[in-house]
Amino acid sequence: MSDPTQTRRFRFFIITVRVISTLAILGFTAWGAMALFYQAPGPAPVKILCAALWAILSLTALYAYLRWRSRVVTLLYPFMIAALLFWWNAIPASNNRDWADEVAHIVAGVVNGPEVTLANVRNFDWRSPTDYTVRWENRTYDLDKLASVDLLLSYWAGPAIAHTLVSFGFDDGQFVTFSVEIRKEKTESFSEIGGFFKQFEMSVIAADERDIVRVRTNIRKENVHLYRLAIPKPAMRSLFLSYVDTANGLNETPQYYNTITANCTTIVFAMINQIVSGALPLDYRLILSGYLPSYIIDVKGFTPGFTLEQLENGGAISARAQAADNSSDFSQKIREGVPGITPLPQP
Image (cartoon, rainbow, N blue to C red; front, side):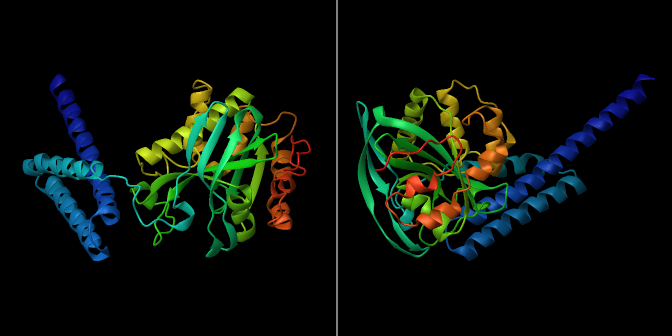
């Protein structure tokens, strides 16, 4: 009785191992081909050739493993994977490339008591996506006058995907907006797939709202929503300094952007989570950032007393931004009617 049972169990075990091994080889076939396509040295034909060779070798190994149950493949293919991973992990991020104008600099900060001086605050005058006046400025902010933190979501690819920005307001009427972005080169454009394969470094941009908000609402015609966050002043200060620390760290040690693990939303979540001692739950809406408002209302992060619909409708600022255009009180005008925001001081 025991022998047939043991035989069945052994066969089931062998079949399970074979299925898992097959899926692993197929997975490394696809991942390795994409990694080589994006990161192999040389021009595009060389990259394509490297990716094709890896795919052919991997599929040949899979055929040999399934058809002949080759022990050589069982031993050799893991070494191929190890070599590929060693090469992958050795690809360095860099701060020295021919960067696109809008990400030519990462903001850097110097803290002196309550005052923070930011170098390379972006303040472009945008006339079209390709026509703009370049301005990088040094600005000083008094954290004792920090009064508000606003979340902005800019929708550019349907309801699930939005770019996340965080804007800090001060009692003297100043605003500065931080944005974690891909640092693309002049010849590159954004790619979700490329973001998985070290195509872009990561940058932290600090900018005037007439630049970083207006380029989205008025120039790119994106759908932008603004929400007032319910954050106590000590946490506001910590969040501001976390952006500064992250930016200074990237200036010192460049890192790659990742579409899932190191993007505009997950980095902000990591900073806030650190400030509140890990109290925020992980959630799919941190990846599908277009749905982030429903997550924040669940964790009571918005000004209380409003429904999600009221927050979304009142926070739709694109029309107000287009009407304000390049006026000096742009930040005040886009916040008119936003739930939870009282009349703002003029700069």
